[in-house]
Length: 200
Image (tube, rainbow, N blue to C red; front, top):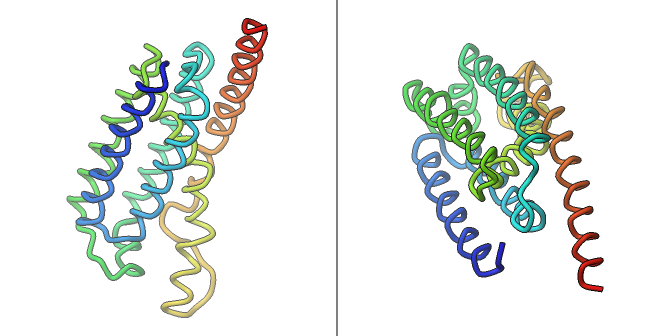
Protein backbone atom coordinates (compact mmCIF):
# COMPACT_ATOMS: atom_id res chain seq x y z
CA UNK A 1 0.00 0.00 0.00
CA UNK A 2 1.20 3.50 -0.78
CA UNK A 3 2.41 5.58 2.16
CA UNK A 4 -0.26 8.19 1.46
CA UNK A 5 -3.00 5.57 1.86
CA UNK A 6 -1.33 4.18 4.98
CA UNK A 7 -1.37 7.65 6.52
CA UNK A 8 -5.03 8.12 5.56
CA UNK A 9 -6.06 4.82 7.12
CA UNK A 10 -3.94 5.67 10.16
CA UNK A 11 -5.96 8.85 10.64
CA UNK A 12 -9.23 6.90 10.23
CA UNK A 13 -8.18 4.20 12.71
CA UNK A 14 -6.99 6.84 15.17
CA UNK A 15 -10.36 8.61 14.91
CA UNK A 16 -12.13 5.27 15.42
CA UNK A 17 -10.00 4.61 18.50
CA UNK A 18 -10.69 8.04 20.00
CA UNK A 19 -14.46 7.69 19.47
CA UNK A 20 -14.42 4.18 20.93
CA UNK A 21 -12.33 5.30 23.91
CA UNK A 22 -14.51 8.35 24.57
CA UNK A 23 -17.67 6.25 24.50
CA UNK A 24 -16.11 3.77 26.91
CA UNK A 25 -14.87 6.55 29.18
CA UNK A 26 -18.39 7.96 29.49
CA UNK A 27 -19.62 4.53 30.59
CA UNK A 28 -16.76 3.05 32.59
CA UNK A 29 -14.15 5.68 33.45
CA UNK A 30 -10.43 5.91 32.78
CA UNK A 31 -9.15 2.50 33.90
CA UNK A 32 -10.62 0.28 31.12
CA UNK A 33 -10.02 3.06 28.59
CA UNK A 34 -6.30 2.95 29.33
CA UNK A 35 -6.18 -0.78 28.58
CA UNK A 36 -8.33 -0.70 25.44
CA UNK A 37 -7.07 2.54 23.89
CA UNK A 38 -3.49 1.55 24.69
CA UNK A 39 -4.09 -1.74 22.86
CA UNK A 40 -5.52 0.16 19.91
CA UNK A 41 -2.48 2.41 19.67
CA UNK A 42 -0.13 -0.54 20.02
CA UNK A 43 -2.10 -2.32 17.31
CA UNK A 44 -1.92 0.73 15.09
CA UNK A 45 1.87 0.80 15.39
CA UNK A 46 2.08 -2.94 14.68
CA UNK A 47 -0.14 -2.54 11.62
CA UNK A 48 1.90 0.39 10.26
CA UNK A 49 5.14 -1.57 10.64
CA UNK A 50 3.92 -4.81 9.03
CA UNK A 51 0.52 -5.60 7.50
CA UNK A 52 -0.14 -2.07 6.24
CA UNK A 53 2.55 -2.76 3.64
CA UNK A 54 1.77 -6.41 3.04
CA UNK A 55 -1.61 -7.76 4.31
CA UNK A 56 -1.52 -10.85 6.49
CA UNK A 57 -2.06 -14.17 4.71
CA UNK A 58 -5.71 -14.99 5.53
CA UNK A 59 -5.12 -18.73 5.15
CA UNK A 60 -2.61 -18.55 8.00
CA UNK A 61 -4.07 -15.92 10.31
CA UNK A 62 -7.87 -16.14 10.01
CA UNK A 63 -8.06 -19.55 11.79
CA UNK A 64 -5.85 -18.17 14.58
CA UNK A 65 -7.94 -15.01 14.75
CA UNK A 66 -11.19 -17.01 14.97
CA UNK A 67 -9.72 -19.19 17.73
CA UNK A 68 -8.68 -16.00 19.51
CA UNK A 69 -12.26 -14.70 19.23
CA UNK A 70 -13.72 -17.91 20.63
CA UNK A 71 -11.38 -17.85 23.63
CA UNK A 72 -11.90 -14.12 24.12
CA UNK A 73 -15.68 -14.48 24.09
CA UNK A 74 -15.41 -17.24 26.69
CA UNK A 75 -13.41 -14.73 28.72
CA UNK A 76 -16.10 -12.07 28.22
CA UNK A 77 -18.63 -14.66 29.38
CA UNK A 78 -16.66 -15.09 32.61
CA UNK A 79 -16.58 -11.31 33.01
CA UNK A 80 -20.34 -11.14 32.51
CA UNK A 81 -21.07 -13.92 34.99
CA UNK A 82 -18.74 -12.44 37.63
CA UNK A 83 -19.82 -8.81 37.07
CA UNK A 84 -16.58 -7.39 35.71
CA UNK A 85 -18.18 -3.98 35.30
CA UNK A 86 -19.01 -3.82 39.01
CA UNK A 87 -15.52 -5.00 39.95
CA UNK A 88 -14.01 -2.23 37.82
CA UNK A 89 -16.46 0.30 39.28
CA UNK A 90 -15.31 -0.66 42.79
CA UNK A 91 -11.72 0.39 42.03
CA UNK A 92 -12.30 3.19 39.53
CA UNK A 93 -15.07 5.02 41.37
CA UNK A 94 -16.94 5.31 38.07
CA UNK A 95 -20.25 3.44 37.92
CA UNK A 96 -20.43 1.05 34.96
CA UNK A 97 -24.04 -0.08 34.55
CA UNK A 98 -24.83 -3.66 33.59
CA UNK A 99 -26.76 -2.67 30.46
CA UNK A 100 -23.88 -0.50 29.21
CA UNK A 101 -21.35 -3.28 29.77
CA UNK A 102 -23.56 -5.81 27.97
CA UNK A 103 -24.21 -3.49 25.03
CA UNK A 104 -20.67 -2.19 24.64
CA UNK A 105 -18.54 -5.26 25.41
CA UNK A 106 -20.84 -8.22 24.76
CA UNK A 107 -22.75 -6.89 21.71
CA UNK A 108 -20.93 -4.08 19.88
CA UNK A 109 -17.50 -5.62 20.47
CA UNK A 110 -18.32 -8.99 18.84
CA UNK A 111 -19.93 -7.23 15.86
CA UNK A 112 -16.66 -5.35 15.24
CA UNK A 113 -14.51 -8.45 15.82
CA UNK A 114 -16.56 -10.63 13.45
CA UNK A 115 -16.58 -7.99 10.74
CA UNK A 116 -12.83 -7.77 11.31
CA UNK A 117 -12.53 -11.47 10.42
CA UNK A 118 -14.41 -10.88 7.16
CA UNK A 119 -12.23 -7.87 6.34
CA UNK A 120 -9.10 -9.83 7.27
CA UNK A 121 -10.10 -12.62 4.88
CA UNK A 122 -10.39 -10.02 2.09
CA UNK A 123 -6.95 -8.59 3.01
CA UNK A 124 -8.40 -5.17 3.76
CA UNK A 125 -6.75 -2.61 6.06
CA UNK A 126 -9.54 -2.63 8.67
CA UNK A 127 -9.26 -6.36 9.27
CA UNK A 128 -5.49 -6.20 9.49
CA UNK A 129 -5.70 -3.35 12.00
CA UNK A 130 -8.32 -5.17 14.10
CA UNK A 131 -6.11 -8.26 14.07
CA UNK A 132 -3.23 -6.21 15.46
CA UNK A 133 -5.50 -4.50 17.99
CA UNK A 134 -6.63 -7.88 19.29
CA UNK A 135 -3.08 -9.25 19.31
CA UNK A 136 -1.81 -6.38 21.44
CA UNK A 137 -4.94 -6.44 23.60
CA UNK A 138 -4.60 -10.15 24.35
CA UNK A 139 -0.84 -10.06 24.97
CA UNK A 140 -0.58 -6.81 26.95
CA UNK A 141 -4.16 -5.99 27.96
CA UNK A 142 -5.48 -9.25 29.37
CA UNK A 143 -2.66 -9.75 31.92
CA UNK A 144 -4.03 -6.65 33.69
CA UNK A 145 -6.51 -9.08 35.28
CA UNK A 146 -3.51 -10.45 37.19
CA UNK A 147 -1.04 -7.59 37.34
CA UNK A 148 -3.07 -4.39 37.60
CA UNK A 149 -6.68 -4.73 38.72
CA UNK A 150 -6.08 -6.91 41.83
CA UNK A 151 -3.12 -4.76 42.89
CA UNK A 152 -5.11 -1.55 42.51
CA UNK A 153 -7.82 -3.13 44.65
CA UNK A 154 -5.28 -4.05 47.35
CA UNK A 155 -3.81 -0.54 47.25
CA UNK A 156 -7.20 1.11 47.59
CA UNK A 157 -9.07 -1.29 49.84
CA UNK A 158 -6.42 -3.35 51.54
CA UNK A 159 -6.71 -7.12 51.95
CA UNK A 160 -4.79 -9.78 50.09
CA UNK A 161 -4.25 -10.81 46.49
CA UNK A 162 -7.36 -12.63 45.32
CA UNK A 163 -9.56 -13.42 42.36
CA UNK A 164 -10.60 -10.50 40.17
CA UNK A 165 -13.40 -10.83 37.63
CA UNK A 166 -12.21 -12.44 34.39
CA UNK A 167 -8.99 -13.79 35.87
CA UNK A 168 -9.55 -17.51 35.15
CA UNK A 169 -9.81 -17.19 31.36
CA UNK A 170 -7.82 -13.99 30.73
CA UNK A 171 -4.66 -15.65 29.45
CA UNK A 172 -6.17 -18.23 27.09
CA UNK A 173 -6.55 -15.83 24.11
CA UNK A 174 -2.86 -14.95 24.42
CA UNK A 175 -1.87 -18.25 22.79
CA UNK A 176 -3.43 -17.68 19.33
CA UNK A 177 -2.50 -13.99 19.60
CA UNK A 178 1.19 -14.82 20.03
CA UNK A 179 1.05 -17.38 17.21
CA UNK A 180 -0.62 -14.87 14.86
CA UNK A 181 2.01 -12.27 15.73
CA UNK A 182 4.82 -14.72 14.95
CA UNK A 183 3.21 -15.57 11.60
CA UNK A 184 2.92 -11.87 10.73
CA UNK A 185 6.53 -11.16 11.69
CA UNK A 186 7.81 -14.12 9.65
CA UNK A 187 5.79 -13.16 6.56
CA UNK A 188 6.75 -9.50 6.92
CA UNK A 189 10.42 -10.46 7.07
CA UNK A 190 10.05 -12.52 3.87
CA UNK A 191 8.21 -9.68 2.14
CA UNK A 192 10.95 -7.18 3.01
CA UNK A 193 13.65 -9.60 1.84
CA UNK A 194 11.85 -10.10 -1.49
CA UNK A 195 11.55 -6.34 -1.94
CA UNK A 196 15.28 -5.89 -1.37
CA UNK A 197 16.08 -8.57 -3.96
CA UNK A 198 13.76 -6.98 -6.52
CA UNK A 199 15.46 -3.63 -6.01
CA UNK A 200 18.93 -5.03 -6.68
